[in-house]
Image (tube, rainbow, N blue to C red):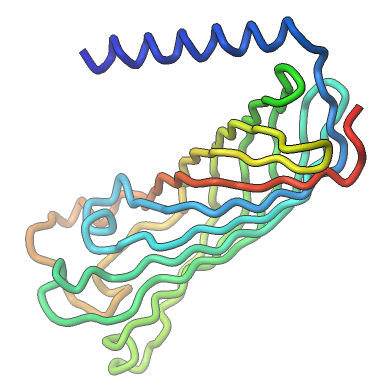
Length: 218
């Protein structure tokens, strides 16, 4: 039933896109600056998903749009996950900070004067800092790790005027590290297999963004 409803919604969206594309010529942005604010949620690593609570994910980037609708951008990101104290066997206060830089490649196309879709992949390098009271007691605060992150993202863009637009976006983040108890100052977690801590830490980010167009769109 859910799959059938999803197909109906997707088909309806495609019909709207097609109708918009026939009533106006494409709008071609050039230089843009975008800031995105989203809510992250852990996915594949069971311990990370249950114990770490996503609070904020912010990214900002400059993007250049080529005439063939391909895009190239560069920017940075920051995120924070807090620790759910009710999901750990002993009290732990603190969380995980993450920060990094990325390049973004993608495809953006306007379907009429007001609406566009922007699909891209952000590829970059991030550092992750686990700052907790337990790590502080152990004298290893913060615990640091890093890795390459890859983030496919889809944005639905609605323009407000010739220099401003807003978007709803969804992205999937592969962080490049595996979450383990020692990162927050604990030896183990109950209810998890050792194999669970070998799984890559991934996240789903859903949020909204704003784009400024430096040059008037054609």
